[in-house]
Length: 353
Image (tube, rainbow, N blue to C red; front, side, top):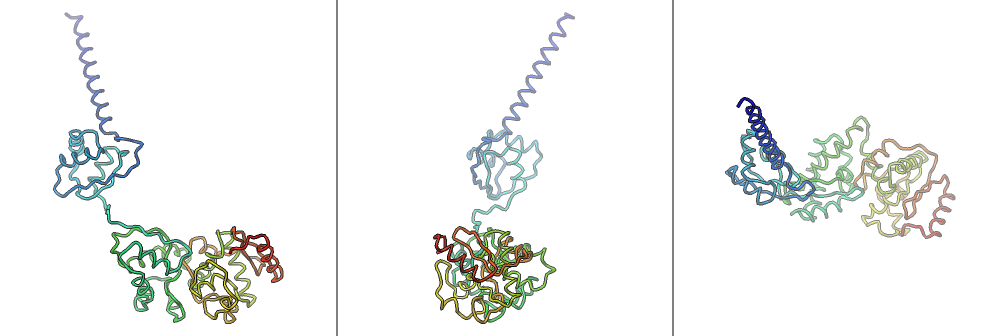
């Protein structure tokens, strides 16, 4: 009898170990993701007043958990106070711990949320079309806000980088160039135009913070808008700003074609005529009245790249530049060299149009 006790104890220990191991293994299995490789988003609506049992059933129907009873056990074991009623987006690759944590914290997911992408190098009129496309606002609604001088004055009081310069009667759209290009999320398609505007201005504030000690921000943003369209990257934009600064110092017209297109409010899709290039406007840097001057204001939205170029140009001794249809930019010092380079590009068939 004495010899049998160790054997019995060993059997009991083995049974306990097996039981604990099995239980631990089952716990790990039931807590793990249903499908670690799945990246599909699954919307789950938890209604107000739902019990843990009802939530478990909803999650099981969506195939987000492996067992409803274990879910209830896990919630109780985790000492979760409450599960928030709202709309969630879960994935089968989420563990039970992640799902329960989300349910406990709740979230701000809103299936009505809209995203609007505003691209760099675009005009206010382009943005108005995009807003009309994505929201209940019309193109006319947007333009009305953009030209509302009373509203613009309130924005000048609110944002340090907006000045009275944008109120000049010759400026087409006071906020041109000041609305930060980016992708933004809004609560729903009924978002007000002013809410969109101020969200974009706040982003512009973030972009400009490191330049806050500079004076005449308007001129820097105007220059940035020119090289946004004239250049293709930070390096050549810095070079182009250097060229433009040389021309201003030499009391020459900047001669920027992109400013002429904006002055005429036409798309940059074809060559302009001599008459159009001579169009008299405080925007057209080819005009006889624009010697040594920047346009009266920005001509498009700007990127961080063009901002960097505007504030930190590359000094050089060039007075001319021209780009081919591939985006290659060529710099020259004299008008004769410039004309020769233009003719060379055209002869190769590499002209933009």
